[in-house]
Structure formats: C-alpha cells, structure tokens
Image (cartoon, rainbow, N blue to C red):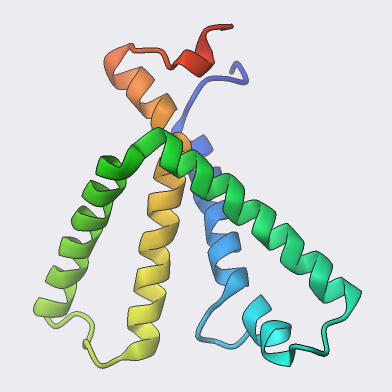
Length: 139
C-alpha cells in the first residue's frame, strides 16, 4: 500500500494516538499527567516538564489538523452528532447521568473520535468525492 493511501487501519492508528493523548493528559482513574505533575505545581521536575511539552505538541498537532480539516461547521456537526448519541445513551438508561466517572470516559472517548476524524477527514473526503485539497497538489 502506498504511504498516502487511507484505510480503516490508518484511522484506527490515528484514533489510538488521539486516545493516548487524551487519556494520558487526564483520566478519572488518577493515572495521568494531570495527577502526576499538574497537581504538584510548583514541584515540577525536568522530566515532568518534558512530558508536558510532548503532550502540548501532540494537542497542538491534533487540534490544528482538526480545525483545518473539519472547520468550525464540521466540528459543530461532529459535536452535535456525538452529543446527541450520548444523550440517547443517557436517555435509554445505559449510563446514569450522575455517574461522573463513566460520563467523563464517554466524553473523552467522543473527543478522541472527533480528533481522529479531524486528522483523517481530508483522506475520507478525497475518497468520497474525489476532491483534492490544496495541500495535496504535489501528489
């Protein structure tokens, strides 16, 4: 397979990286950068600062790519789609609204899917419509 081709496995890789980024930054289990370093300010070590910088770089890459590929309207539609899906899950009683830990995990998972979709959207749109982005003119 060519390096620039898109497949379900490439979306899954983007989703895994987004999940690592989100859940390493914060998670309700207490095993995250937030629990390791942020709570301990001002006693941060160089390793904690370096790890934080790596997380910030990851967030910037994912957020910038998502903003560029989906745009404001696309992000609003994705949030509306997943928000309505989440509302149905709560309404059907699958997850209780007062279960803060479960709600936090679901919201973080939704964020992962939105970021992975943002990272993949140019490839998906090109496959569906045949349109090429201005960034893809050298291909």
